[in-house]
Length: 243
Image 1: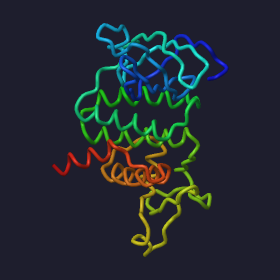
Image 2 (image 1 turned 90 degrees about the horizontal axis):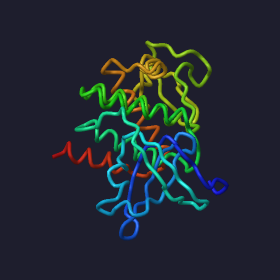
Image 3 (image 1 turned 180 degrees about the vertical axis):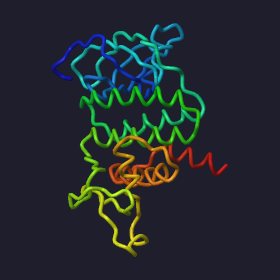
Image 4 (image 1 turned 135 degrees about the vertical axis):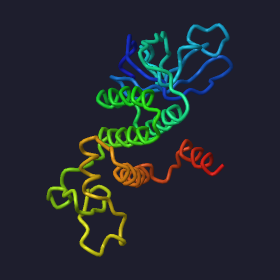
């Protein structure tokens, strides 16, 4: 970013904002061609600021920015449209996705494929009021995120290079992949069916068992790569369930 003084018309989404001084905002954005970066929106907190109503999460924007420092100045924002507003459980899911990307995406590392997946996931969340469908949508985005940032996930073959068998049981070893469990080993390690691994690979989690096992697997993988960092959205959701 230090070599680029001006960027115009860059597709982006707002991931997070926080106040800066009295009238400005620092906004964390996920852009198509520059990845995750921070921008300074000067005066965006003023009551009549043009940017005030535009810098919303989960809405597609086109942004202009300028500057050579670590936090360039946001010059212009335009709402692209086409994405329904998230509400209820879908809104909470959206905040979870944003927090995941804030934690796992390095700055200024472009991931155009993930940008497309994120936009499609938001559209899917808005269109799926069924909690089961929301769960499946989250799992598939988690898989896409881990694959895009270099944590290769293989669901077609096990660690030994053998094809995954739908009727077999496996455990998943970090940085290596699936290991087939021998009879009697099911209780010795977290088990996942071969069918669930194949479903994850195809991006089709339609069965309850597949959704439950995929959730456990993704939680295991994310915990490893988060290195002990707790997600605030997950903590809040757990507290709400307890209430």
